[in-house]
Length: 92
Image (cartoon, rainbow, N blue to C red):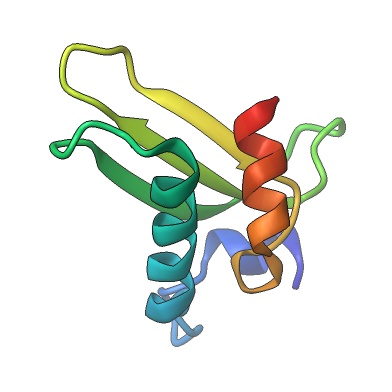
């Protein structure tokens, strides 16, 4: 998928990211972090136009009450992310 394709995902008739993949990544991140029960996770696939970026990456936001929101990145499209990728990203 091109950078523009990832950016436009969910618009102009292109498929939206797989809901099951989003939930799977949230579950893996939650299991790895074992956060406060009120912690919220957001998972998004983005297209990065910076030359140092891989193009398409998955970003996991961890929003814990009373703590600054943390962002973790996996340099892969959402549907290619593995549990090991999540563990590696959260350790970095």
